[in-house]
Length: 236
Ligand SMILES: [Zn+2]
Image 1: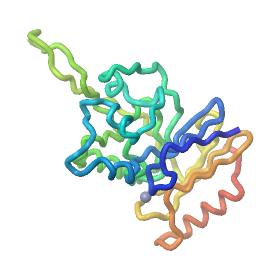
Image 2 (image 1 turned 90 degrees about the horizontal axis):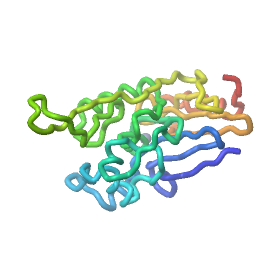
Image 3 (image 1 turned 45 degrees about the vertical axis):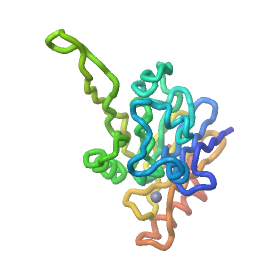
Image 4 (image 1 turned 180 degrees about the vertical axis):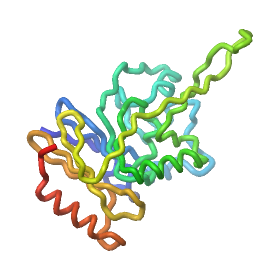
């Protein structure tokens, strides 16, 4: 049996953080910022404090409190134990709009992130050029890490950067997460590289649209996704 928990994206536009699990395997569909919640509390110059680790985000209910998914530096800084292993097996990113991807910044680096080549390139550009303090989509730079000065006369902040586990997926080329065989399906949206996903385990099929349209430049992509979803091929 497949359970689906919605931690965002219900009765709002975007903010999708949907956890799919079947007992052994679990993965998120997107991990985005909910605009409605963010607009309630934040503005350009009023952002959550990085110095408060994960707490502002959880306290204001931007992020759900789930063990084993958040980055070590943000947890340990506020005295929350870091689990040795991640509690989810991956995140499938549908596209690179912030309401679908922004909170990947907060995830631990050993959770695999699956996304299209185009989404990867857009995130890389955002990460390299973005002014946001919360845009470590591909590489995580550990904060609050101190180490001894070379001269031995005190401590300094260490800038440790670690690459995330990025997995670029090709259209309709199956890949596995645990028990699930999954295909990404390009769809038409206002951003290149937008994808839906078709995930199949032994009993059920989960189809995730992400954001799509039928009236745009490439309706044939979306139509193909609809057709493929009707008759999903369980073979990897
Ligand atoms: Zn979108």
